[in-house]
Amino acid sequence: MEPAALDYRHAFQFAPVGLVLSVQRQIVDCNERVLQIFQTTREQLLGRSFAVMYPSAAEFERTGERIVASLDAEGHYADDRVMRRLGTAELFWCHVTGRALDPTHPHAQGIWSFEDLSARRQITADLTPREREIAALLVEGQTSKLIGRRLGVSPRTVDIYRGRLMKKYAAASTPELIHKLLSA
Image (tube, rainbow, N blue to C red; front, top):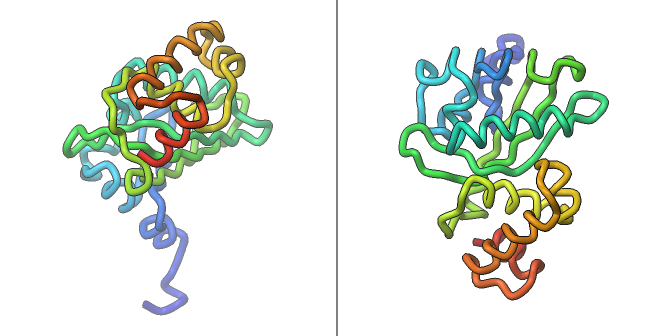
């Protein structure tokens, strides 16, 4: 391919991370890597809601609320979350980074990148949607108080979920739980 023939469309299509352009949480365009990560086709994604990529409708809704509450001044957001492959319904950890083009209207238009973390991080226990959210925030280093504020629950509720996670992962302490979550 000649250098003059290389344009932004090639950079978008063949980027080493999954890229999605969205309007009102609907997928307007995506690249080849997204199709590989989510084991799907363009026809199954374009014009559809991001909800198809989530384990449940509730997780899709809560993530949307979390994004709105957590955007920085430039409209950036990032986290690790559990997502769902369309081809197999397999759940996997994914690092998602995004930018709302207008921070005052977070879901109006956005650019999102997706990185499959499953080679480094496996889902080894049957987790509820809330446990998955809390596990992701614990891995980020959030305290019970901060997690509670972010999810709209009490710190005590977060501690209960942390206890359930510790039992499921056979962890004696929070640092051990985080280590097991990261290396599972």
